[in-house]
Length: 195
Figure 1 (cartoon, rainbow, N blue to C red):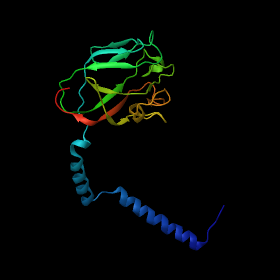
Figure 2 (figure 1 turned 90 degrees about the vertical axis):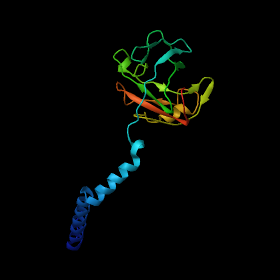
Figure 3 (figure 1 turned 180 degrees about the vertical axis):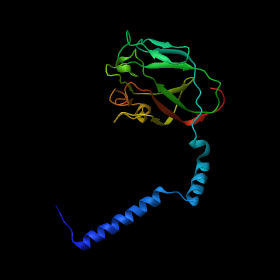
Figure 4 (figure 1 turned 90 degrees about the horizontal axis):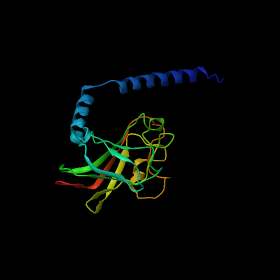
């Protein structure tokens, strides 16, 4: 155990008192701080507010390798575990009258019918989304960024828009199994008019 001198203990006490004063100042509010906070909140306006999402109604959903996709009346799509291959390319066709589309939100939901309550079909409830693409008719639209409410370490949503092949990259959720999550994909150039 190190024991300081009287002078060092006095200096330490001074530091502790100064730290306590600074901490109290940081934790308190002032009229100036509240005014500046309100002004800052106005500047973020629409961009800081929750985005109003429009649920798209799938017209068709299928897997290239014959996965069993079921479009439900609430517009969710369930990929059946039984009879579906371990990996597949899913294609979902939607039409919308929505104007000014700047991105897409993909929600993945847990279910008691999935291994470990999902949301993936792997025995541990996980999945890897390796490639997320958006086409308008035959034109592939460029995605500029991707984020998610939860990302497995080493498997961020951004990896799902780079077009890399293989299951060792993409968006995955280990650590958030049995819970819902969402990925957000932003278009490089927003769509205007009806899509």
